[in-house]
Length: 240
Image 1 (cartoon, rainbow, N blue to C red):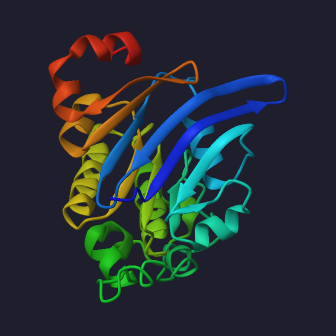
Image 2: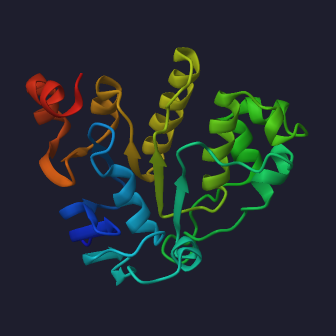
C-alpha cells in the first residue's frame, strides 16, 4: 500500500543549528500514527517541514505520492493536509460559526468520492458545545472549547490527513478526555491522523504505530503492542 505521507531522510536546521538528522516517518491511509519525544527533540520541526513552513536541508516529504517539500504551505493545505496547531490559533474576532465556515471545503472528494463530508452540522454533532457557543467570539471560549474549535475547523476542510500538534496540552483532565473520545471517534470513521502528545497510556490504545524522536533522530519505531510491552522505552525517551 502506498503511504499517504512519507518522510524520508529528513534533515532540517535553524540557521547553522541542525535540528533533524535523517528522520523517516510514514502514515498509511486510515492509520493513526504518533510522533513522540521530550520537548525540543524535533517533533514540531518535523511537522513544520511537512507543512511547508520551513524548507528541509535534505531528504524528501511525499504526500499522496507527490513530493511536496518546496511547495507553498497553502498549496500543501489544498492537497488535503490539515493541522490543529500547538496553541490552537483560532481567529479571536470571528464567531465559532464563522471560524468553522471560513474553512469549509471538500479536499477528500477527489480520492474518496461518495464519502460523507464534514459539515457544520456534523462538527456540531461531534462537539455539541460548539453548537451551544456558535455565536460567541473565539476569544470568549475556554481553552478546551478553543481546542474543539481548532479540531472542528481542520475537519471542515475534509482532509486526507489530520495532524494534531500537542492535542491536549494545557487542558483540564475532563476536557482532555473529551478530546480523546473525539479522536477515538475519528479513528473509527477512518480518518488518517498524525498526533503529537505526551499521554502515552492514552495514545497506545488509540494509535497503530509510534515513532520516537531523540535529539532529532528516530530513536525507536514500532506498534502499540510493542510500546505497551516495554515501559522502559517510556522512561528512556519520554520521561514517563
